[in-house]
Length: 464
Image (cartoon, rainbow, N blue to C red; front, side, top):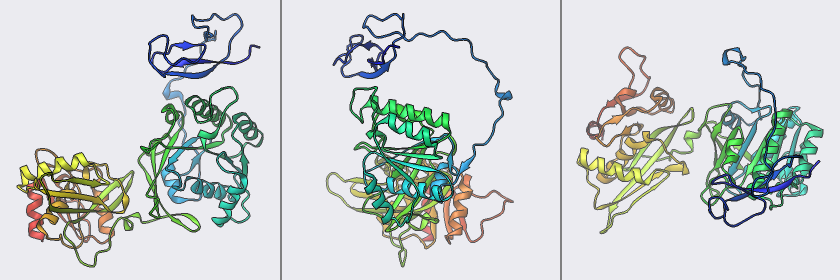
């Protein structure tokens, strides 16, 4: 059998070369050649660059219609961490591949070590493959987390072939690879962490997971911008992509599902970092609500939606006298959208901030991307500008358009019920989100439906 050798494929045009070149010989693009392994077949023809041509003769595969295929729910195994199970859609799936990324020191290894230990104690064989730490360092972390007498098996190895041989011999229920950027294959000559190594190692581990039924969790590094490092195809290969978010100076962490073939996306889990590791937070709204003895100007509580979970977040605004070039700064919210909302506020509500510095902050370090925060942001800015606080127990949500209309937010009834459950009593919401005539009212909550931003301002003036 001919020995496998490497070829170099252009990521732009698909052209190939027998050796690495700075410029693609086909399309003249620079630094686009990526190493791949090619298995030369006897008698196969070569292209003009000397790389083997991949040809094979195979019979036609059997087809099946969708109606003939039996649809079954995937069996899930709870990890023992409720917040992690929420993000995963109920637990890990046999043969599923999960990719989790986050900033260094955010708690990825801590979370996964707690999860595999809980699974091991529940009778599921688990292997923790560490490529960045020694076995002694992992054992020290386990002791620090209070995981006494943990039976999790640890493998300190970075060579892909040895990892796959070990996993094939033991067939664990779950295997954690920490991290995929440290793993390398002898079939490639490039260094660990390169595009080719990350892609090929992830592909082999994915194929093993599907064939063996072992759930594989890959830990991925992130770039300075916070995106997962390596080729984007890495995210397409896996079944689930999780991002670990949070400020290292804060004790709270968010795990967010960006992709999930077995559950809902944009679901979040909230954890608190303690001396004994990460603990799930059952009521995350309490984190993002500041405790004011009395209402203060510029503070409005927003009911946002993270995945399927309604969550209350305090929006704070500060409007102050600006100079010749007033500043617009937002933390946790879209800055460009803030400029748009200020223009709508001026045009349709007659409230001008053109000579004022405007600062907007989402309390607790949470990031809000949905447009349903528009109404709360505008009310907070108006409250700060006038120096008048909103009444105690006040909440608001709704998208505001350029024409001044207040558009409905998805799943408005769930948001209102969550606010009422936490003791809020006054709500300004889009008219389409208010309970319809004859529908059961939400006990303890007075709802003021509005259709335009002018109406919302009039309601607030009457309440202040």
